[in-house]
Image (cartoon, rainbow, N blue to C red; front, side, top):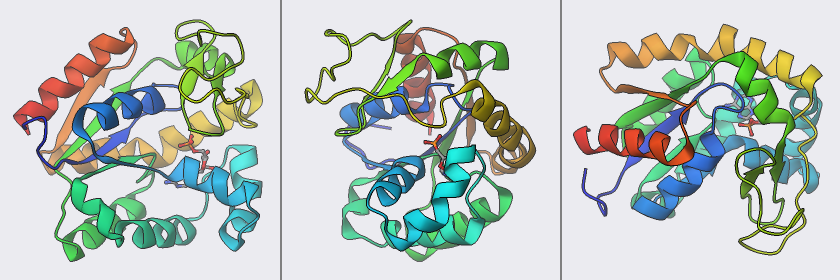
Length: 221
Ligand code: AMP
């Protein structure tokens, strides 16, 4: 895959595996559209839209939002013309019904998923990453107090926004989110393996090494 080719990809992995950080790098490198369902829900909740009101109780508890709500949101987003520049789906699909819906949606718009990257990591490491994560609510950049500190404490390097901790980045919520990943999302690994489009990457390496492995997979796609 050439650097400026239009890529249509899915990034998956358990909470804290580094999806947000790798998304930022992929968007910079390939100029593709970042579609994060988690970000879309956080925005909808902050703005108290009908979708936000439906999603709030689930996201705050670390539970998956029902499939019909998520699928409708992604359907609307993928129908916009800017998807022609290529898309990176971050956090979607998370269940088999979502993956089946995505196959239909992307067929309809003539932009099938070319590669699914799965970041792999041990739960014991993930919990420490999650509780030390800080995010910028203004531009969406993600930091980590252990491994990716902002230059000025509490302030976003990109936009100067005030960094916050996500409501669901607690030890209690993490257990629920990991459980949801293992029960509902992990089956997608086989689903995409069978389609021959899955690439697995060790998410415990440092950020640049993870990105290097992702690039190698995309170059082969
Ligand atoms: P994330 O930012 O990807 O960790 O997502 C944050 C929260 O948003 C999740 O814990 C879910 O409550 C909700 N969410 C995001 N994407 C999905 C999805 N594809 N299916 C169901 N719930 C989702």
